[in-house]
Image: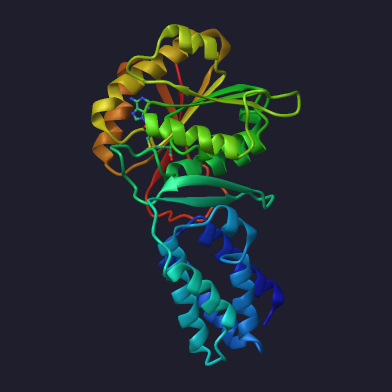
Length: 323
Ligand SMILES: C[S@@+](CC[C@H](N)C(=O)[O-])C[C@H]1O[C@@H](n2cnc3c(N)ncnc32)[C@H](O)[C@@H]1O
């Protein structure tokens, strides 16, 4: 067994576990290869256990009870296939989650390239309380990866994010891209409360100093946002992830983007929108509305380095808008 490979496997398990990736997306085959090649398969499993269920992140900000239970059962199954002696630590970890009550809220933790965790309280269900904003969507992960590769877009600038949801993209930008000010925004009461908690728990505050960003959360409803609010924010860069999914709100989103770009025409406001294209007709409608509003767009196509674990089956497209 090469130690490097065993460590790679356990690191990938760690990233997938804390981001609560679907279990079938884990690299079980690579693990099985490591277990077969190892003179000490229990050591390989114990290393994974220490980086997941026994890790300090799991004590502070654990994935859901059900997820941990299913993960441990699968790990036990794979371990037993090697015909090794049962590993007490696995069963002790399982005992902790077997009787535990399931809660509607859990934590997902996304590990930055530096190893720093971004932990977010998220709902277990994708849609709850009539909103999509209580979980992190793939376009937010993609936009975060893009930001990590393009920190110059944000450095020293005031950034406004529309439809921030649980807050991942903004927290990543604040941690890694050195904006001067970051304004998270959304419209839904529960989403705004969750967003404030997540921003706060990740150490961001409104009172930035020369070394840290000033971050705040604002209610900003696309249909009714005032010119005063937009002027007060004074964004140099506007970003949004996964906000093009409902044909009924495309019109007001485009009107808002047009207003923002017109305000800042002389100062070259930059606008980036990352979208998962679930329904091509809805997405075409967005692009048509942009054209009608006189907004040109450039499709940003260059691939980004895969930093966060998520399924990349759906097409995600990023647009840069200009007048
Ligand atoms: C699919 S979620 C995306 C959340 C986050 N950007 C992500 O990608 O994980 C869409 C977000 O847009 C917000 N939103 C929808 N319509 C809005 C509106 N009219 N005004 C402001 N925010 C809105 C929702 O509350 C929700 O948080």
